[in-house]
Image 1: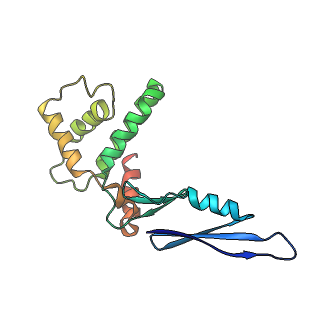
Image 2: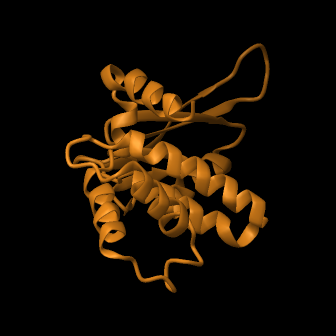
Length: 179
């Protein structure tokens, strides 16, 4: 829940009194000092504590609401990134991004069990998954479709990159893929 209140006015060394505004969101306390009561009132009225997409927002500080964060796979983040960048970058940059992502994505799989042939997997990632213009126009052959399906199912969750006990190993694995 979200609540706001103003605390005492403060006057130090003959300076102008200041107003201390405090608000609490999901058990976390935040505060800000103001020169005038009206500033504090306007600031408090402008705070928005309604839930938005699983988060409470108050100013620019999001606070997690109860419940687990949505799991997003590395493959999904990489394809979204390519789709976002595609219209705004040159062809050579598109090639470089596709090459880099096609190299590192197989390294960020949850397992190597049942992994498709490396050439097939890299080829489908490079020329289809990380090539926005080819996706709607290209029909994948069975081995390519199977490789892509395997990658979607076994792509590492992005939240795993933030787990302290796994973070170093996963990042090292990704960096070693570029050697």
